[in-house]
Amino acid sequence: AVGGDFFNVLALSDTKAGVFICDVMGHGVRAALVTAIVRALVEELTPLGGDPGQLLSHLNRDLRAILRQSGTPMFTTAFYLVVDLAENQICYANAGHPKPFLIRRSAGMVESLQNQNGKSNPALGLFPGSVYPTSQCPLHPNDLVMLFTDGLYDLDGPNADLFGPEWLLAEIRKRIQLPAGMLFDELLGQIRNSSNKGEFVDDVCL
Image (tube, rainbow, N blue to C red; front, side, top):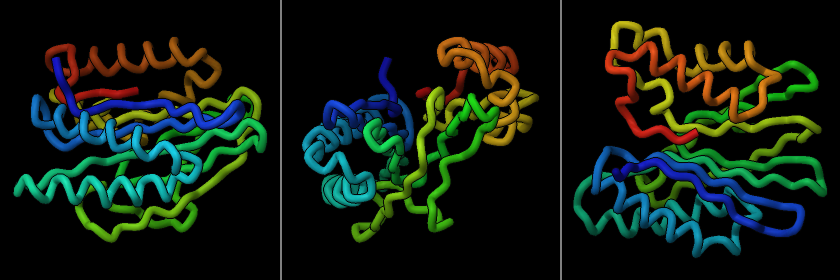
């Protein structure tokens, strides 16, 4: 099986790690090939890994140059964050990707990781000059950051309209104290049970 979703974790230092997630347009072999290209580019850009906005901006430029030669429109949404345990903060940048959730277990709150300038940014590979600003927020003990692709709530069935980011947010709030593995298993099980064939219609990364 091949697909167009993937994530990667970059070891940046003893106290910093980068987490990259992306969703390539389409399905099958073609999407998987572009995914392989993106993965290779991210590895090459690891020296820029401490600055999410800079990494996405360079990745967009390089990916655009490669995809332009294919003659067929192709793009990928992506989100990249850096966890800094020395400074107790995360910084991140978003390229047209579903907003991850920051689950603050100690406070009993769940929030979306919004861009601090309040604007959305285009997916990677569309415009050569796109710039992706870096946002940041504090990190507290017991916090959980949940990254995912839109296949998580892209369903085929009579109840498909009930699902989406707001539904997902409400379901996470009900399970806010669960360990990550149990939280994810319950969400995936509930979504599968509501689809026509008991399976997802799109690639899923969580």
